[in-house]
Amino acid sequence: MKVFNRITFALLFGAAVTVSCNTKEQGGSAYTITADRTAVNDVAANAPGTEVLVVTTDAPYWIVLTPDWIKADPTTGVGGGKSTIVTLTIASNYKNETTDTYPRSGNVVFSGGKTSLTIPVNQLGHKGYIDPSLGIGGIPDINEFRDFIAAVNEGGSITRWMNPVGEVELQADLDLAELSAGWVPIGAVEQTGNGNNACKPVGNAFSGKFNGGGHTLRNFRVSKDLADVANGATFGLFGVLDHAVVKDLHIETDFTVSANGTADVGVVAGTVLCSTIENVTVTGKITSAGTTANKRFALGGIAGFVFSVFDAETGAAVDSYIKDCKVEAEVNVDCGTNTASGATGVMYGGIAAFATNIKDESRIHIENCENNGTMTVKAGRCSGILPTANYGAIVQGCTNNASQFNTIENGRIGQIVCNLSANSAVIDCVNNGDLTTTGAKTTTGALVALLGDDTAYIEGGERICNTGTILSAFDPSTDGSNRNFSGLLCANMNKFDHVSNVILSGRYGAYKADGNHEMYPVNAANIMEYIGWLNDSYKEKATNITYVSSGPEPETPEAGGGISDLDPVNDTWD
Image 1 (cartoon, rainbow, N blue to C red):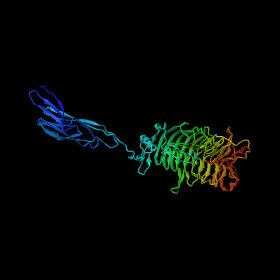
Image 2 (image 1 turned 180 degrees about the vertical axis):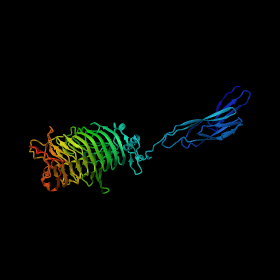
Image 3 (image 1 turned 90 degrees about the vertical axis):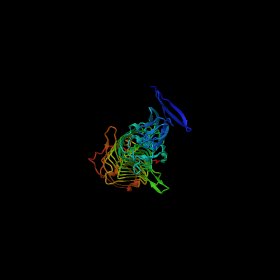
Image 4 (image 1 turned 135 degrees about the vertical axis):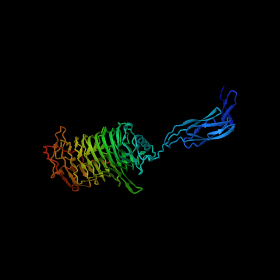
């Protein structure tokens, strides 16, 4: 017996193609199966529908076999040269809009009279698409966190990561080790214009609400050298917060950063514009080599530059808030070549570094914050809370527990605030950290270094405002009784609205490099001699200042020193 197959192609009804398959047995007749299509190609993955074949055979009968994802109707038929319309129903190769699926292929085989015909069927796959506006309710992993950062910095939608109340919500602890090496802040901007105390972000600031959900960002290990933070730049986990909120977050960091010009840097945010940071904790190390230019470098454990404005269109002040935040850090900050102690110097603050408005009715509120750890510093301004309260900064209910050792030659150093200026206040704040300054011309105050405006004020509360030991290096060429610019309250009380209801404790003395410091006999009777230099014209505005002993009184030193070459009113506000 000799068997052979032949497939022929012909045009049917114009574009249709006929496929035939013959079987011829020795001494018998030849049977043929034909179809009007050689293959069924490019079937849609989603809602593929049906395909129709016209099958003709002169065999006495035929049957069709299909894969399980294809159904034929009918599945059998009579031949004898008759044509049959066979409908193929193809199942969907699809899961959902965001899931990739693979293409698939199968064969539809018609058989009859010992002959057969095969029609390939090829179905397309589906490439999933993630719609940025399709919400998933939060940030569950590092990949989604990376996508969130990109969306902010590219000016895209962040709806995908919002919870039902419109907050971008962190849903798990994240390890930032793989992102930190080339860290780009969330809300990166080209420059802020902060050199003139005007916050004008150029770029895509973060303007949403970020809820950390009580979770931790680990291994935020940032190392930036002098060339990386350029003049006018702002840097941190967030670059610029613009009418935004960041809350309920813990950050574990090893944060090393310096600058080559005006720069505003904070572990949480470089620049805070009319925004709120609440219940955020930072732990780890903060290190800086300062700056190579005599321009402001503001570095903070939470924020660098904090700004508020009065909105003329709405007639309302838009304040900024940093509240209920805590920093626990080993701080090592050097000024680099910038040794200035004014508004253009290097400044470090345990909570924030520089706070201001443009002499308007808005305010910056730093409330119920706490700074812990150690501060080893050579910088013109350094404090546990806020070194520069320039305009409109209210520091209230804050506590500094970190000791500071500062070797700047001519600085303004206070453990709560360094410079307290227009419409600014320190209210019910406490310093428990020791403060040591080694420069003979450095003003050194337990709470504040300089009170410099008629609208600035200090108010105590029920707590003891200072328990720390204050040591400063008096100039040995001057009379020991002239301790002009250091004190258990302030260093230089030049101008202020009032200083009232302050309870002091702690010890006070003259720093000696050999460690044999000269301690002074502070007590309830003589406390006014040790609060710091007080302008005679303002003495009646300093009221109800008391002292509570914290231990045995030290012996009176035989000799001491003072600072006679500083002008108490010599300060320039930027």
